[in-house]
Structure formats: C-alpha cells, structure tokens
Image (cartoon, rainbow, N blue to C red; front, side):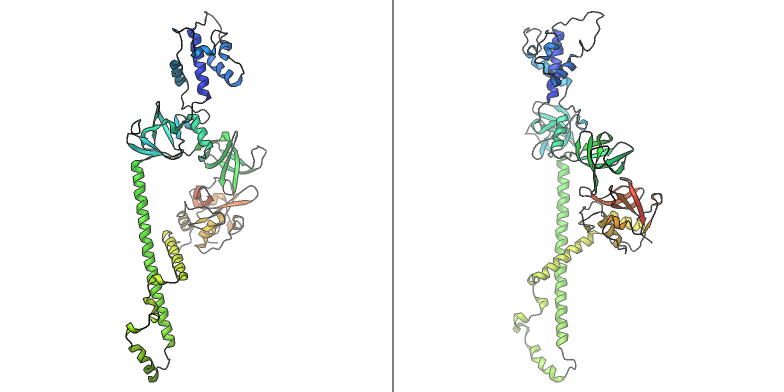
Length: 485
C-alpha cells in the first residue's frame, strides 16, 4: 500500500507546532498587527520544509519558544501534545484521499495488487465475497480503518484490505505510472493540435469542444493525443480535461450473468460449427457421387449395341459384396477419409459461411441511407492498417473501398486518391453516403462516410477501430458525392 506522502508529514508537523505554540502561551496583545511574521505558522512551516534548509524551522518560526523535538518529546507532561493528538490533527487537516495533483481521485482509491481483489461484506477474510475489483480498478473511499477500507464501486459496497489500495494523489500517481488508459475532452471552442510541444510548431488540425481523444502522454503544459491513425499531436493541457479510465467493480451476480452469457455463446458457436461440418460432409458426398456418375456416363458407348451390353452384363451381375473395396463408389467412403486438400477447402468454406451469416447483405438500392445503414453494422470491428476486411480489420480508405464495392463502385485504396472521385460538394450540403476528407497537415490523410445528423462512420485507429464521430471531430477539408454520379 502507498504510504502517506510528504504533504501529510508536513501538515502533521505544522499542525503540531502551531498547536504546541498556543499551548506554550505565545502572547497576543490587544491591538497587535498580524502579518506574515506572526500568523500562518502551519503554512510557513510547510514552506520551510519544502524550500528551506533550516535544521529546525519550528524553532525559527516561534523564536525558540517551541522546538521540533518538543512536538513528540515535550518537557511539560501535563500540557504535552501527544502523538495520538497530532495524528488525529493530521487526519483532520489532510486526508489520505486528498487529490490536488490528480483531482479525479479525490476521495478515491485504486487497486495496486497484481490481480483482482475481493470485496467483502465485513472487514475480515472470513466474511462473504460480494464482488471483485481488478488491478487498477477505482473505488469511492467511505471509511479508512486500521487494516480495511470501506469502499463503493459499481454496484458493490464493502471492504478491501488497505494493503491493496493507493489513495488520492497516490492513486493518480500509480495510475499514471502503470499504463491506465486516459482520454482528453476538449474544454474550449476550438483547439489546435500541433506537431510538437511548441506554440510555434505547425498546426496539423483543429478539434472542437466536447470531443474526446485518446491520450498518449502528459508532460506539463502539453498533452499528446491521438486523433486518428494518421494524426498524433500535442495540445495545451489547460484546454483539455484528462480522465483515467479505471475499471469499476463487478459483483458476484454480474460475473455469474456474464459467465452464463459467455457459455451460451460458446455452446451456440459449437453447435453451429457441428451443423456446418455436417452440411459440408453431405455436400462433399453429393459432389463425389455426381463426379462418379459423370465418369460412368462418359465410358458408356454412344450407340448402345447389344454386344456392348452383353460385355457389361457380367460385371453388373456380380454381388455387391464381392466387389473389391477399392472399387466401391467414392460416395460410400467415410467422410473422415477425405484428402487433406478437401478438408482445407471445407474449412475455408465453413469460415466464409460463418462470416457471411453474421453480416447483413448490402441492399439492392443505391441510396446514401442504404449505404450508411450497411456501414453502421461494422462499428466496433477492428482497425488494421492496409486492411480491407469489414469484419477482420480495415483502415480508413479500405473501409470506404469495401463499403462502396457492395454498391457497385470501385475505389482505390488511398484516402488522397478517393478524394479525386465523384463530385465535390459543400460542407453545408452534405447527404448520407458522401465522403468527408481530413488533412494531416501535409495532405489528405483520412476519409470517413457521412452518416447524416452531423455524424460520420469511419475506421479511426487501432484503439477505437471502426466508430462513429461528429463530422467535425477534426477539421474536414473536402467532401465528395459518389453515389448517383
């Protein structure tokens, strides 16, 4: 568990010093003027501790009335400030859950264990487990005890052992150091994304207020964000609100329901696979029978003379059981005896059949709405640079290429090249199905399909895959209409 940080120690010494000074009888006469020399002891002690090199800042500030050693080793037992009293004052002055550097974690904690931790109904290991919180998971701190903390996260409220938690600013520092994903939401009307951490650096695009972007790094006044796969740049930290995406707790009931659904899906997939294999085996058997019939037809004489029929008769009269095994019709061979090439063809056909069953066929019409509705079913599928597969992965131009191919249009695999097709239209005259193009600072680097209502659907980046966004989530530079042209 992360220990109380230096800020707690400073406030503890400051509080104790100020309190002891009062107990020791520091004079305050009527009409005395108070300024930085005789008030704000706690704050000044903190400044001395952080910035100064004074061996005993408490004695310096109190003109020798109180020494640092007096705080925990007082000479006057009756008026002594006990260690317990100081500790209580520290808790009151500065909670472990304070978060000034990472305000998102104010009154919160994160799990620092190597794996999931249990959430229990009581503060002991014998009580019932009501849920789990995985490594990096966040929770609201309700009460910190000696060994256990009462927390709330997701639908769970219970206890987690203190040793597995980091609190307040320490929770933020841990999340920062352990790869917890972050997003940045723009909090100003229009924000420039620059090529480098310098206000004189080139602006590669503009992003609008309210849009959310993945954060690569935060270094002081600059935050590095990902807009799309072709743009990774820097914005001023003061103009974005950075949020850590720590997971929430999962209750026992929620986990049981998730397990049940996963089992149902696995069982359904297995039954579908068996059905496909059976269908393929039947298809292979029918194909072999057809081929055997075709061979027999080719060997039968065309004139059908009596002599030919007499030659063929003896072989036909032999009992079926006396035929050599090698001469049995191919259709009667067990399916397991298919050759390896046949099995590979069958497996590939099964995979293609499964994929096609999951994808709705493109409509016969060619309206922009039809195209958009077809494209939207692939939202959530992966982004793969250079890919054109709507299910297994595509990049931005590969996604557009494959969608338009379903409607009879052939486009190149390049956003810049696609911008030269169709008819250019105004951004104020957009219709569903139009293509929007975006600059990466040096040229067109990204393309999206306008979905209507101010939204686009596009293959964005490896983290988000195929997604929807506001059409101006970055600055569009061109729009073209291909449908109907």
